[in-house]
Amino acid sequence: MCPVGAIQGLVQSISSRFGFTFKLRFSKEKCVSCSACVKTCPMGSLQKKDGKISYQILNCITCRQCEATCPKKAISYGLGKSGWEKTSIDKQQVSIPVREV
Image (cartoon, rainbow, N blue to C red; front, side, top):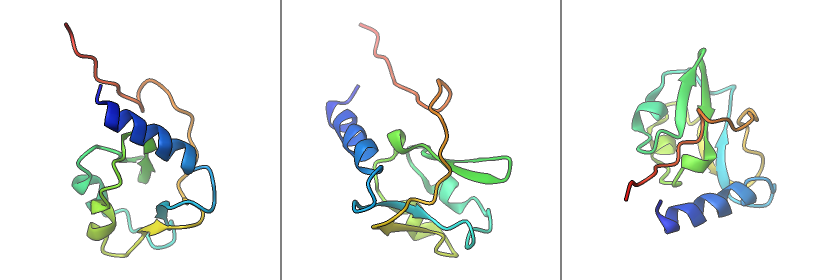
């Protein structure tokens, strides 16, 4: 596991819970479910399930490629509420690579 990525994921996970920190924001009203953001995300943080876009913050590296790709500007980066639906973390959402020795 990459220590830099692990620390960044932890910091981002904690800071996303506060309204005054920068985070990816999602506007359900603007989203047309075109999946452009899902296809662009290099880390697989965005996924489309049952017609809805979901976000796994632990995989996100905040490269903002999804924001740049969205034709309707439904994804932005800034202060305030995230707009993503809260889901519980299960084994399918979090994948931790294990290196065999």
